[in-house]
Length: 179
Image (cartoon, rainbow, N blue to C red; front, side):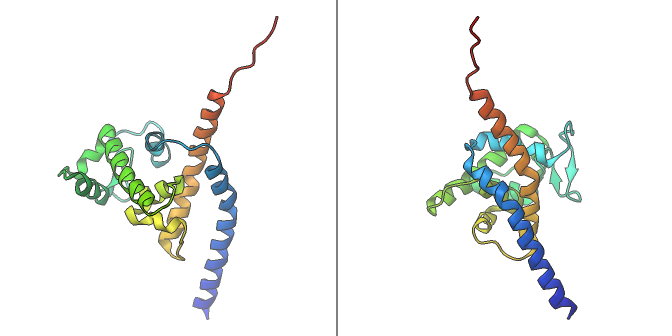
């Protein structure tokens, strides 16, 4: 009885959350896109507090550096590139950028090969949930991982949207004043 109530309650909460996020998601997809380079540059802004040291460790000791890279992401990087770098390289922000860019570019190419256009959601889901998480953008599951992906996206989207809006404003011509 309690289990049935909990399942219905969870589904209602997920639906409410989904309807809350739809305006955010559609807003982000309708705006001008950002490059993969720009996206990767923004990752530390939602991963760690401002001015965190490169040696920051999170997720109960499993995520390293300002990009909060897990060992499995480094293993993915090694598989993609044929390298053999250790997890500890994630403490170097520049190398973490290379790891993030390489892994996200690899899966972006795979998504395009599957006939889809890569979205910010694909990149966020991959970065937070691993290489296969991109499939959950269009085929969500009713599980804890999906909830984590939604929460992660909710945390990152305002930062991405602020960047896109600021970029748009920088591109607008300034009004000339005639004297």
